[in-house]
Amino acid sequence: METKIFLNLAVKDLKKAISFFTELGFSFNPKFTNEQGTCMIIGDNINVMLLVEEFYKTFTNKELCDAATTSEVLISISMESRQKVDEILDKAVKAGGTDYIGTKDYGWMYQRTFLDIDGHHWEVFFMDESKIPNNE
Image 1 (cartoon, one colour):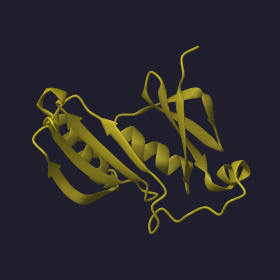
Image 2: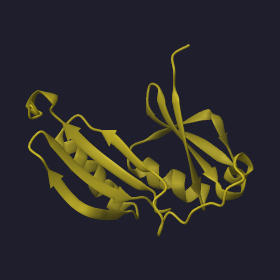
Image 3: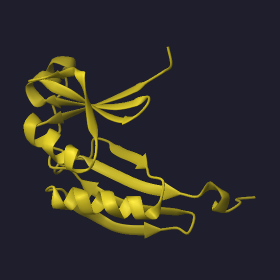
């Protein structure tokens, strides 16, 4: 079996979270979906478990942070082009997310950031590795 990544995020309203990420073009694995959570598919081996806050709390003894005011994680996903980066940001804002921080263009990497409806921080970027400056 290949190694897979399952990132877990607490959400206030699962139906609203599913609707938000569906608007961005993501799909969900019905095998890992019920009233307590769902598995959002990012890539072949990358998934995000969106878990209702009360269910999320059963996996930790720590307090949940308020993602609207506290940084818990920076989620970064790559896109195949600058245009796709802009498209997903436009979809995120239209679906109720927040365009956050502003566009960063490093020449070799183009990045935009949004906050989802629960305040989670998503960085979406396109990177052309052939243009990365040589640090020698």
